[in-house]
Length: 282
Image (spheres, rainbow, N blue to C red):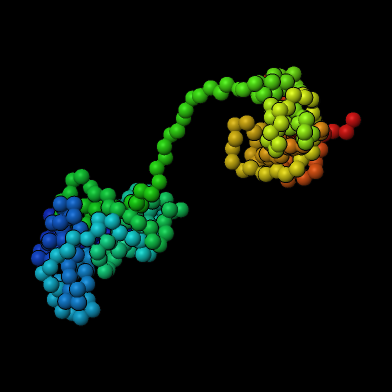
């Protein structure tokens, strides 16, 4: 059985046609890095420009209007697997883009991740450096810049005051140091030199914990270098003998099993509190 013949239709040297005064002006402006439309008798602006008003059939006015360069996506469809002749070699969107100052939409490619695509997205053109007077001089459109990422890093040294220095020194001995107000008898941890409620000077020191009770907690799903895993729990823990809770990591238990009122005990490591863990019965 004979094989199917291969058919080819080709214009040697390419098919040449005149552009006319309207499309020719449009392509010339593209080569210069500008986008223009044409005005109709009804004063609407058509982009791309046309020689005749599609609504009335009347000739458009010899009145070219520069539009854009920015525009708004009105409709879009996603291309997951670009083909050979597509403008981009990675997933992109075909979109109807209403350029600022225009009353009709231009179909073109938008180079953006699918999660960024939406109706109403503001976009700007990305031009090819070697423009020749073709619609492909507009390589594609890209989303308007709405956020920037700034690398922020600063180095600093904290010098603890007298109260905090005593508290940290006690932690190195696996001890929570608190202070009792002589007037209202509230016990504060970390240790402090004055009562935040009545302003009395605190001189009495005492040890509290290391066990305590979870008063409230939060399950965190973002990584933290101090946490053992994600999700992890940060909790307010009222140490035995204290009247104010401290916040600390809670570990050695699945996050879903943490509950208010749970009894926990401090796990010390390296002169500080590594985290709290459920208190085990002796």
